[in-house]
Length: 84
Image (tube, rainbow, N blue to C red; front, side, top):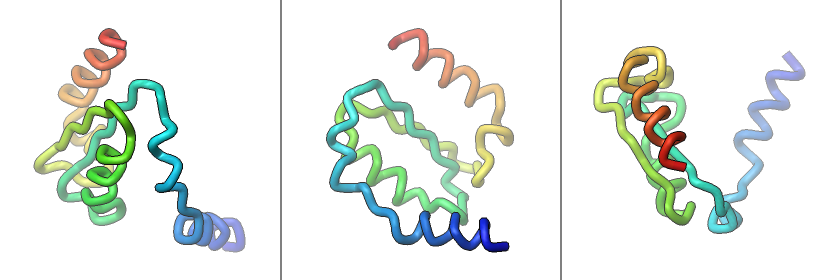
């Protein structure tokens, strides 16, 4: 339980939004719009702050949208990797 609590504290207390603009590598952000653990607004913020990032939304996906729509996720990821 101590390890889990430490992870939660790190997620809540660590904030590096002010450094996201320093990311200079191609960045793909995917989000399931039904995600209750990582709200889509967080991905919108990442996309806004990371220069040149690409944001792909999975309208009916949840926190594991990459499993729920594996074919689409793999296609998008492969296309992104081949492009960069």
